Length: 99
Image (tube, rainbow, N blue to C red; front, side, top):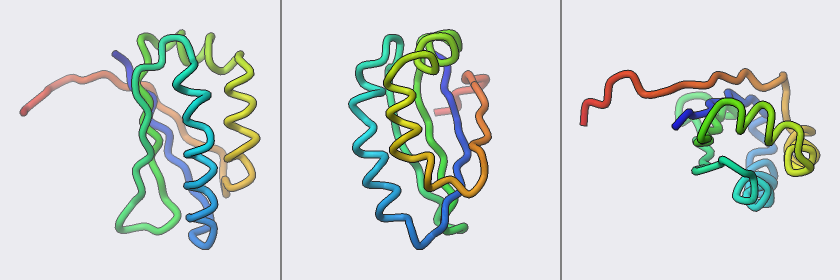
């Protein structure tokens, strides 16, 4: 499995509304072909900083599939207005699984 890790920055004053919008977006990811997991992590040290972590079967399932699907447009409509800067996205795989 590949994980999409997106670094997101929003205005900390909008945190509750942003998190509510992400909850509304969950069904779009759940319905996406090749999507296996979804979570949003909030930084404890830096208010307004988040990490979106989505498990995909392949990079193509994310880039070629989801990003070209109506669910992606719905996701961006829900959360895009909150972004201070464009998301910074990496695709990662486990190199060492310690425990």
